[in-house]
Image (tube, rainbow, N blue to C red; front, side, top):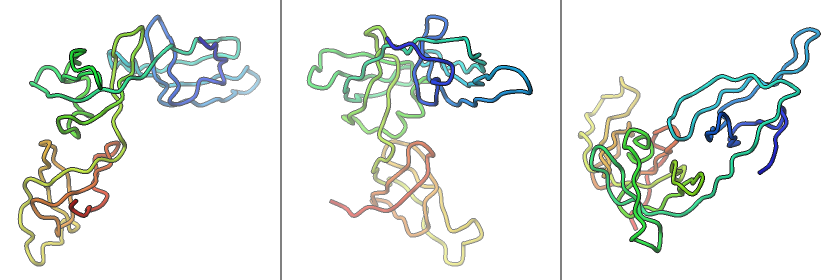
Length: 191
């Protein structure tokens, strides 16, 4: 377990804070007049999702959280829980409350492989690829001259997620989605 100085607490670092794992969302080191430097951070509890704003002073240190990753396969979501199985070991199943992983699960199809972050050997959250290719299930037909809305329409993907796509996208097309922003990036060729 590495000990981090106040200036090593940077974005995407996972730290132990109040005996829980937190991911650093942002950090800003500054000095006010004749005072000592301070690292103003925003951190999110990986388990509960709670976001805190914490100032770490020059004399403070924090432990880096001991986390591991394992590959898992997305199975299904039943409204209250999202179920996964360890890749290669289908008997090792586990679930997350649906609300805690809903932003990621909306881009997953059954049997998608994801990375699971574990803390103290317990699964705490998932990370999915930044870009995924999904089939368009439903898209309204393009109306000639309908470019007032910027030339986009709302399409429903095979996972049930809705995303704005260009007017030329039709049902059955494969589109690439940026999972961080939830936006259409390009149309893909069918395999």
